Length: 295
Image 1 (cartoon, one colour):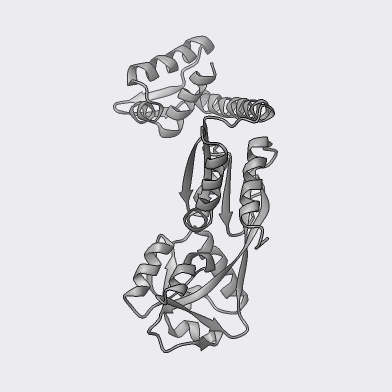
Image 2 (cartoon, rainbow, N blue to C red):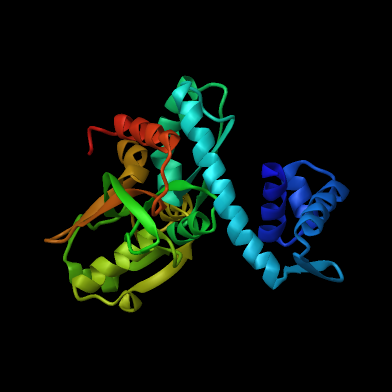
């Protein structure tokens, strides 16, 4: 029954039998059969079929809530007893916001893989808002994010301190500026929804600067895109200090100091309120160990 619930959950969240079949590595008729068996067992209709599209019925929405809870408890049960045997599940998904996924997580994932070679780790990365949503909808159980810890449905645990620094091309004549000078510089920003964008807007507002008053030259969806853009122009951007360590060493970018202004931000482990897992606890220990010099 546990696998049948997973089939239903995948169809319900993708609203597509064909997409679910590809994700689950099943034939489409097999997926349809699993759904039909559930409908027969409980005497309900779970999906409305309209041409090539499907939607959840009211009963389907209720069933999804119950199935998510059951699958979550099943995973907690499995994780608990596997940990007693010093074993990890065959597959583990870890979420991470974009900056963390690119510059912080890989080191610890390599250590985890060496310790648990039989486990396939999958890293799901997106901006912080999307990662939090994936936890809410049980697509992933835990993640690492930057930004504000504001969602009351989620539990946040500080992992690491980060700093956003203003960087530009090494050819720039600027070395130090005042906070008010930011409104005169061509700026490149991350997209709305990213943790970097959120904390930047908050800190600038605290300093009396409306982000809409900046000369925003470009909005890009990743730090790597921003860095490449800066190589070939005279723009400025706020990025994580972790993301430019190699560029600073190789004299590709430079940090511009801002008088009496800095942006510190905590990075968090995040999970649903009440979520408990010895597997999650082990993973947190690996990440803390890998970065304990900055905790």
